[in-house]
Image 1 (cartoon, helix red, strand yellow):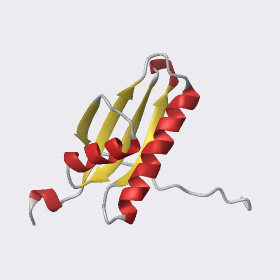
Image 2 (cartoon, rainbow, N blue to C red):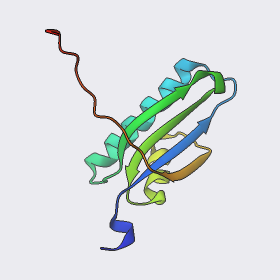
Image 3 (tube, helix red, strand yellow):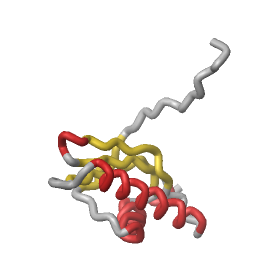
Length: 102
């Protein structure tokens, strides 16, 4: 298997001084929608999670992709700039639904 065929996890950092939480959430939504559009066209790039850090006026996006170029393309299509992309190791717990019977 070629190295560019292997999916990796990427952390994308965004620092937006002066931007309010609602605007940060809008950026995250645009990224998610952009990734969904790429997936409909056969891209394996996928959204894993995001974290908004209000005190730092920042948000972080964790996603999977086969290359940093795919990540850059996804953000370009979403119209969202970023400050840094890093290969990351993410341990994301599966979401569980609360059981109303307990």
